[in-house]
Image 1 (tube, rainbow, N blue to C red):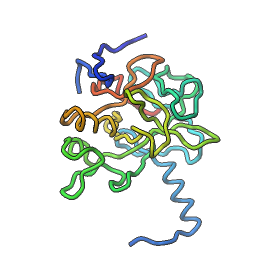
Image 2: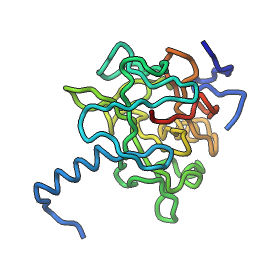
Image 3: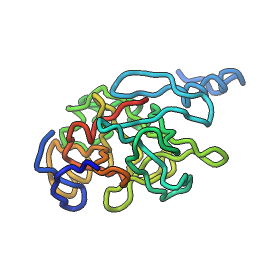
Length: 222
């Protein structure tokens, strides 16, 4: 079992190694919009077609070939999200494009609008134009769940759109978490410091880290 050597500070794991509208829609239009919202996603800034129904068959794995996994086939809020060897059960995840109210679907850095990161953090300029996403998983029979964060930066399932840490920016295989990146700037005054989704340890919870260590923190859909 491979491990990454790191310093565990504030549990965000700072590694010593670096990083004109229409009022009404016709029924067919409503269906089309719903399919687009569900079926189109972004990975590393490249558009791909996801599933248009509740059952995702894709896996999202890091450079160690450890894939996002729902611990114990859990489907409820708080279920741990693990880094698990490719080929295991419960690995049906897919990154899907989303929109943040007041910001839109892409990182904005204009004189009038800087979002979704905290203004002044430097991250809106760094990732300008990159897509805003959420990492969905198949929870057939109940509302969709997405990868979010607990209070110490470990990955758990939470409601899509409202769960803490579910909004991520896709950039060259990295998934940058809006919540923890804003904590870096607003709480710890760390400028231009993104927080990445990483899987450092085999069969352990994924976590959000400042390290951006290649292999552990870079992902692709399989």
